Every structure is written in C-alpha cells, then in structure tokens.
Amino acid sequence: MTTFHKAFDEVKENDLKLLIESGATEGLQLEFKETISNNISLVEEVVAFANTQGGDLFIGVKERDGTPVNVSGIDINPDQEILKYKQWVETNTDPALTNILYRHISLANGGHVIHIRVPRSWNGPHMVKNYKFMIRTASAKVPAGTSDIRRMMNVRDHFLEQYNRFRVQRIEKTLNVYKQETPLVLVHFLPTSAFDIESNYPITERRNSINLSILGGSGYNQGINAHGLYYQSIGANGYRGHTQVFRSAIIEQVSNLSFNYRKSYDEPRKEFFSATHFENSLRESILNQLINYRELNMQDPFYIFVNIIGARGVIGSSYGASFISAPQSIDDDFLQLPEIMIDSHVNQDLERVISTIINYLWNAFGFVSKPEHG
Image (cartoon, rainbow, N blue to C red; front, side, top):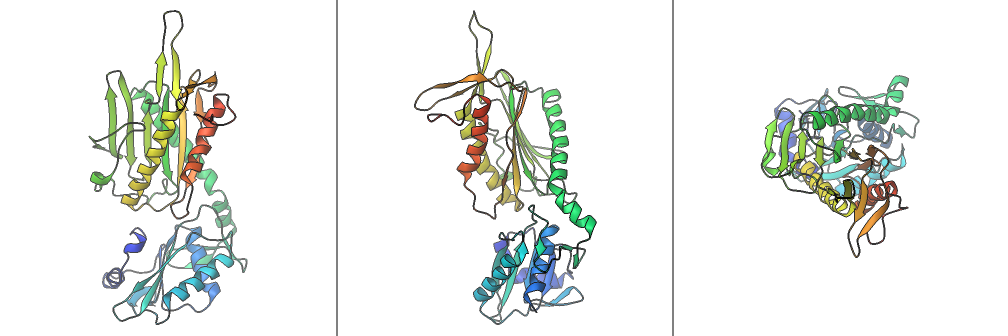
C-alpha cells in the first residue's frame, strides 16, 4: 500500500493512520522517518527515490522494522523545516533536484508531519554531493552499482526505442484496421512511465471525467475497448479520426481534420494542410490532456510526439490577417516533428512548447519560422 498515486495535497492524517491499521510497510515508493538525523541522510533518501520510481517520504511517523507504528509528528515550525530540507536537497544533488514537492500535514495533537513527494527523474542519474549514486530497493536506499548507473544513463534511449515500436504498431492498425486514409496527423501523449509493467490507471472507472475529443474536433460517444477508452469520428466522407486513452495513460489522437484538398478540371488534386487550424487544435488538445492527467492523478512528466503520415506533396496554408500558401510542399512521406517533454511540476510556457513544434512544421514548408500573419 502506498500514498504515491494519491493527489499530493489530498494526503491527510487519516491516510497515515490507515497505513498503520492496514499493516503497510516501507517499500519502493514509501519511507517513514521519525526525525532526520543529518542532511546527507535526507538527501540520499530523496536521490534514491528520484533515481528509481519516485516516492513519498513522511517525517514525523515512528516506524519499527519498516512498519509505521505511530503518527507522532514533529513539534517545530514546519515552514522553516521545509525550507531547510529544500535547501539541503537542491545544494547537495547533481544534477540538482529542483522539482521536489514539500508540504506539512497538521495533526490533531498539534504536531506536524512533513510530506516530501519525489517524482521519478528523467534527468538522471542524480548524485549526492558525497559522490554516491543512490537507488531504492524494496524498502531501503542503497548505493547504485555500475550496471545500475549504466541503466539509468540509457533510460531515455530505451524509452524512445519502445516508443518507436509502439508507434509502428499503432500506424499499422490505423491504416489497416481503422482504414484511415492518408494524409493524417498522429499525436501521442506519452508518460515517461508508460512502458513500466505496473503502469495501470483507472481509465474506465473515471470515464465520465475523461475528455475524448479528437484533434480539431469533438468527442462525446465514448466506448470501452481492450486498451481503455475509445472514440472515433466518421463523417460523410469517411473516417475522420479517433482518440484512444490507454490504461498506461498513453493518449493517442489521429485526425485528418486539418487537411483539405482542391481539384480543378485542368489540375490534379492538391492536398492542403491548415497550419493555423492544426496549431489551435494542438493547443486545445494539450490543455485537455493536462486536465485528463489530473483526473487520473498521473503525475509523471510526459512527451508529446507529433507525426504527419502520408505527408509528401502536402502544401501548407494559413489564415489570419491574410491567407498564406507555402512556397513548397512537404518532401517527406513521414514527417516527425520535435518531441517535447511536459513536466507538470515545473512551470512551462505552453506557447513556447507549441511554437517549437509549429516552427519546425513551417520549416518543412520552406519558411524559416511561422509567418508573421500565420
């Protein structure tokens, strides 16, 4: 039993007492301390969580052999204590851990429990300034071995390899099973924990609060399939797109709503891609997925992967103060835009995230960046 998948601000004294009553023990994502003996001991605990799968550390809970026995609390100024812990962690870790969450839980006896939530880090491995790389085992922190450090350094490359295999499978299903015609846009929102075996969110249980709108459109009549929640849009001209929310919290959006074609008697059919429509659709989609992840209490950072399939020959267009048509068409049949990582624990400029993707798209159409009136 753990508190790590409960919203950080919602963990209360009763939750700690429930851990005692249920016989919970310290584990991969849970640690109790009655007090903190020294700063390096605290930093090692935090680094171990960050280098493994993240976790919750409670200071002010007495334990015996890893089992909590009393929520005693600490009788000191909690705000000053939190500030001290934060400074210890940020000045004694490399790369510095700056996205750790700190709060205090007020107890009925007048004391406080300090609650520290450590997200799993994807910027590691992290080292304590005493030159130790720490990881978390079943119920304790231990120094990382050479193979552990090598694995942590390769984690991003391994993640991208897994995603590439997943993407190929999903493209094949979109084209061969759903019979979606190209060109199309494929967007994946991918939590950094998506391929972990234990990654399983209550998708169907919370279906009434999950937004399944397709990219650039709407979505209300959701269905349930083997993977989680699903919505597809079929218009007068055929399949328009779908949204799939996987139990691993991967969100897939396929859409052709930003494409349109023109054909005259003396010219072949030309496919146009409205970059303005796509930009607005992507912005709305990112906001929707941030809400979906809050509903699921998915706290990990996540990647956004944008792919345009069947893109060769597509001409970019934009509307705004004036209509703009790109000087060249896309010359790649499969166009992968730069992946972006979003970390909900860090303040990020959403418009900067979107502009990174959109400017690259306009590069494919022959522009240095997004046109001024695009």
